[in-house]
Length: 114
Length: 112
Image 1 (cartoon, rainbow over the protein chains, first blue to last red):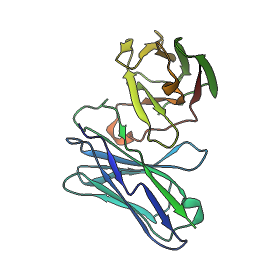
Image 2 (image 1 turned 180 degrees about the vertical axis):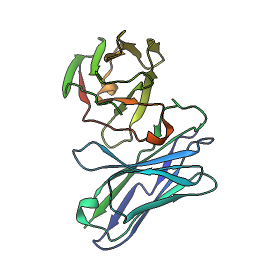
Image 3 (image 1 turned 135 degrees about the vertical axis):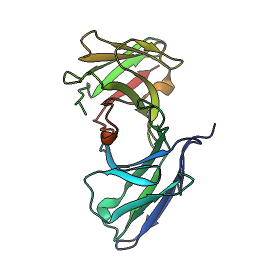
Image 4 (image 1 turned 90 degrees about the horizontal axis):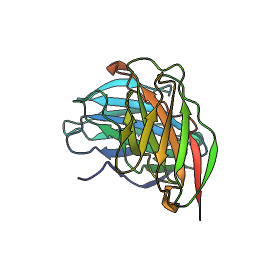
């Protein structure tokens, strides 16, 4: 079974630009989560999508947004990039059928803002 | 979600059992305990989870105390590839609060 896949693996942008990160969940998984992991810090929850709708978001400004497509893949968009947005962005998925099913993570997109 | 407390770092000799503790004294009755690990520059890898009974899979064993206020992850025969940061997380049943809160974890170093 293919795991969670994220693209691109690395992304370099300049301040003020926009970045789009993509995630394909494990087949059969309907929930997708996004996390930010800045260097030396823990994982910070960004967004949760389920069945195409945003269910919850973390303490991030509105320039962080996303969406989930009918095939359950997801996109994270970061507008007006700032230097402190440089981080590893992780996507995770889980099945919505079991309330205690674990999250499965991809290997992330390393975003560098210069 | 309940807060967890883990030691910041631990060492273990290769081939020995690695026992990683986690305190979750404010855990509530419907919250599960999950363990993940993260090897440098990779995404967190799911290891195991449980509610109140001890659990075992091909990667590890999870021992949860009877009062559920703490748990221990056991890697029975640690290898160098088990060197990673290990995260203990508790997560509740309520669907509306599905965000996992990761703490700082335990940095486990397996020594040859």
